Amino acid sequence: MHVDLGTPVNTALFLYILYSVQRIVFPSTSKPKTVPTEFKGGYSWKPKSHPPTVVFKTYTPKMLEPFNGEDGGRILLAINGTVFDVTAGRSFYGPNGMYGNFAGRDASRGMAKQSFDIEMITPSDQPLDKLDDLSSDEIENMKGWYEHFANKYIICGKLVNEA
Ligand code: HEM
Ligand SMILES: *[C@@H]1O[C@H](CO)[C@@H](O)[C@H](O)[C@H]1NC(C)=O
Image (cartoon, rainbow, N blue to C red; front, top):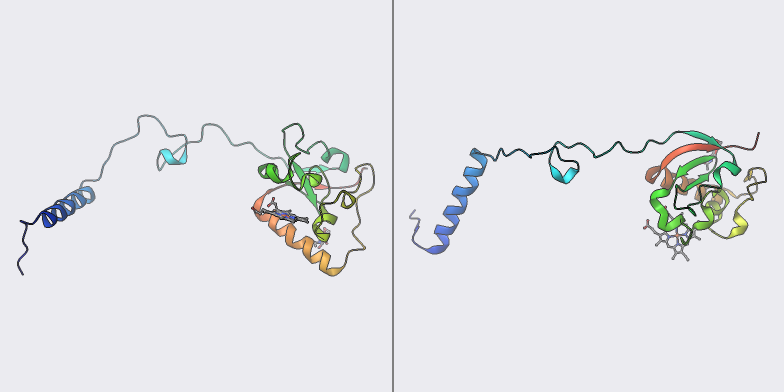
């Protein structure tokens, strides 16, 4: 076999192979001057600050209501007695969001009946919706949403009646 190093393409490929082999044999060992504070900065990095911690709490409907995102703060909603922190979904649940009615509320009935109408929402000064008139299909639908939320958001509490 005769390899002609004379043609420009072969020379270019040969140089490229040399360069690649050199990178494997003598890997770059340059160290970042400061500790990276983000994932893109390097393999070993330290976040700028501690991520916010979420404390599991027991909420009543009245305690949940202020977490409706209207003040730009956290947004919580409940499904079947479990409170989810949906702040990351502000575009859905914020004041201008399509599902804003659920913010700070028990969303169970709406999730079950696939409706974000205001009639789905129990006023916060009334006892929790018992959901005992729902069909098994509706319960299944709510369960599907519950799982969606459990996979996507942080569970941060439970919703109970006023003592
Ligand atoms: C007018 C009909 C509707 C349209 C066009 C629509 C559209 C959408 C779209 C585009 C998303 C975003 C999906 C994603 O990016 O993950 C979404 C999510 C969602 N939709 Fe709808 N939707 C409609 C009706 C409803 C109704 C009636 C409900 C009542 C329960 C509902 C509840 C939700 C919920 C809970 C989410 C998940 C948001 C999240 O992951 O935080 N949608 N919808
Ligand atoms: C709702 O919560 C009750 C009580 O915790 C539980 O027994 C039931 O299985 C839940 N239903 C759904 C659809 O998640």
